Length: 120
Image (cartoon, rainbow, N blue to C red):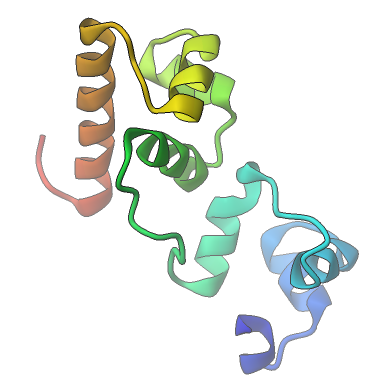
């Protein structure tokens, strides 16, 4: 694990991420998963994103939210869609209306370009 390799205490990690040492212990023992809002801080701490490259639309949507530490409601607001729609699309990977699929594809592509540093 990253913490032990760096010879850090759970308190050290907790301070860097902004949680309690007990929270870090629960994550390490797989008792609780970290909330999506803390994923960006965890990725900064370990120095890379261990998540697999998203392949499906649902995985791309979930990855976007996790990279930015967003709730479904906040991600939907950024994309300009209703939170219920985002939630359903993320769960099923299906968008029944072409105009919303185009909108979401463009939104995710734009975000991907920002992450990789490519121009729009």
